[in-house]
Length: 313
Image 1 (cartoon, rainbow, N blue to C red):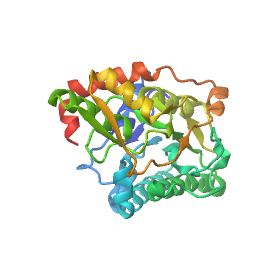
Image 2 (cartoon, rainbow, N blue to C red):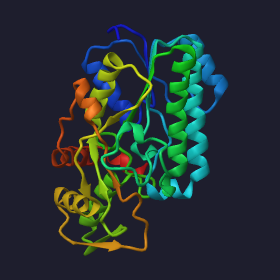
Image 3 (cartoon, rainbow, N blue to C red):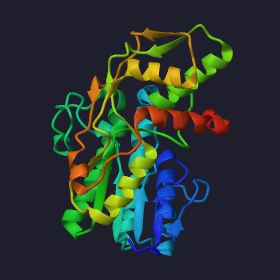
Image 4 (cartoon, rainbow, N blue to C red):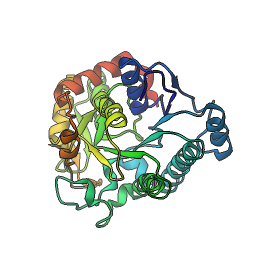
């Protein structure tokens, strides 16, 4: 990408989109296009088509999405599928129609089968059943990456897909029911510390294994891939390291300074038993993560404390 190329970042107010904007600016890209939801509703096809026709961005980072944790995904299956499919199809199709040079689609590791061989390689996609608790979101993301692949095959476009593991960091969503596990734990332990609560109850039994990537490390990879990768197969983004949810809860509690008891409600779902990405492809391309989990959680908690309004989302 040329430093003065017209670049559209969809979802620039979210955790991933805002990190991509920071990274682009850090690297000296000066011609960035952003729109708030009030300015451009990506669910409205005519509005998206008009935006692309008028602005004609040369490069697109598609980081916009309806996201949430296990409870939100399970309770709002239809909403997660419809909204994600609509907004991604609108953006990708309009980018193609208006001559976008390159588009990067941001997905999620939940696209891979529930019992995929670990660590999960990019080619295990669609080889067996998905995790039911986030099946709707996963199907929408699979549709997006497949549409990019099919445009490449049919029309010779240069559209790529990146599949991040669990993300965290600045500008995360700390909503009590709609957030992912790590920000949810930050909020829960912080509030328990302030209230002097003797214990905190967490979902499941704590046994599932999860991998976490600091969002600024992902943003660096996203810009790197836009400049150095083309291909139909997605690229995994992760650390190659995993931790149990129990160990994660203890690490977050320690970082926050909560000294009470951690209890587990085994009547609540665990989700996928293990989700570790094989990141050898990204490493061979020349990228590796920089931020270790303990350091990243401290940075995320500091961001949470400095930006209390984010806790209300």
